[in-house]
Length: 131
Picture 1 (cartoon, rainbow, N blue to C red):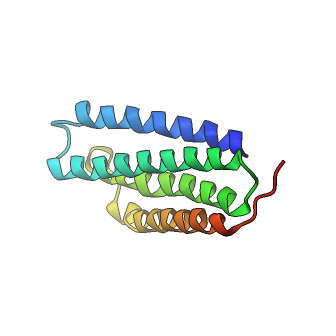
Picture 2 (tube, helix red, strand yellow; picture 1 turned 60 degrees about the vertical axis):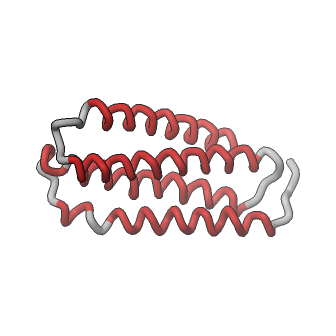
């Protein structure tokens, strides 16, 4: 699991850099400034949680903790739902996506981030099982 989180975290961080660059250069003039701000929030949280996923994978090298495994999956799901929905909300006019489909997804993604951090915290109370 630790290598999987390391690989996914690396890919997520790379995707955040690519999407951030695309937002800075490719979306300018295409969407309204407030939509670019929404997009940048998605990139920011995407990157934060890619780093959290990398930290999770590193901590899993020191011992198996079930809460860390769950935290990693919550971080991944949060990136997909929270940041993904903000990306799509930002370009909804360009892609003709109804906001009613995406609006409720963003808070669910935020909740998954929070649950991931709670589990990350709780893992500090778990005894680790060395491999």
